[in-house]
Image (cartoon, rainbow, N blue to C red; front, side, top):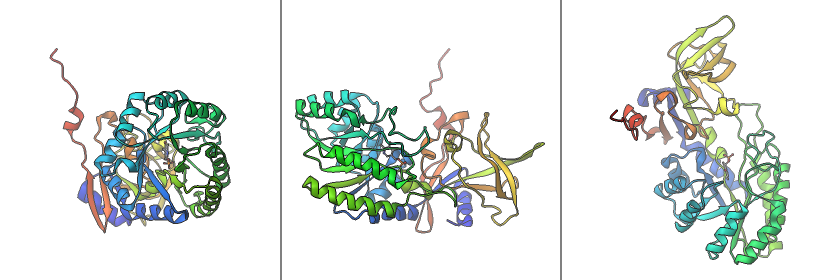
Length: 400
Ligand SMILES: *Cc1c(COP(=O)(O)O)cnc(C)c1O
């Protein structure tokens, strides 16, 4: 999107503001579906990345399914128009009752714990279940975002397959899918393919599979020099291997993925106004009308979102440290080159589609921003800015 278009949207909808470019989401979805040339491909959008119901509807219209991690996400998906058979539920550490409730809705259950598997299989032997395997592969390299390694809380260890088989035999339950999700950043395709071999190996042990789910972790660039997962190359290699496995397995299978970041990260823009420019002895701070209440990734994960000054895109570049208004250290960017900033200018944060609004809070009793979908050259409001009533909602002023 162009700086002028974004600036106009803040005039129309106010700021701070989240904007999502529908065309970019569509582009990414098509890239993914074109990369894997198999008979049956299923993309389940991991909605925790960005859960606005209009975004869900957009993805549904593209043909996507949905990957959910809570019963509330399942309900939002149904509300957006997904049918239960298009939704998979991949929770971790939720109550047995929640799993039961979701299964009753007709949603595909994905279990990642032996005790839950045994309990569920004994009670509902006829309900098809997918199993989340932990292949113990470190895909990311960053402790916070690698979920496949030995100490991870996710999945059932690949070394516990004999125990899984024992449970399946005892309960006569129906395992229709095998799943893995190794971490949040695939930097190296070979590492991903290595983990896939472990999944293929595990799959051979189950006779009634309908799908193999390879999770996600597709990396998107945050700046020009960043490495991006080469989806096209991965597609070529994994497609070939998948087709060979199907032959060996003796039955057609669905190849499934559940990307979040890949589909929506680059489609998102976060726009916030500069309240103050503050010179100290060593630094020029640009203080914006936002903080980690709206965009926590830089502080939480050290994410480097690129920042543009859309009020002065061609200005002379200077160095700024961009901070928020929260009464704590909330640094968005340190010593960053940005076209000259004046108080009142509008800054634009890139890659603000995934894990940005969905992680927003009301800390410091601030309102959550509005969200806008940019489609066919027009901005459509998809979430109203909060108001003071929203802050009071559910609070009780005691008569004391
Ligand atoms: C979060 C999550 C995803 C999506 O990961 P991205 O890095 O956003 O693509 C996929 N599957 C599961 C089980 C997840 O928890």
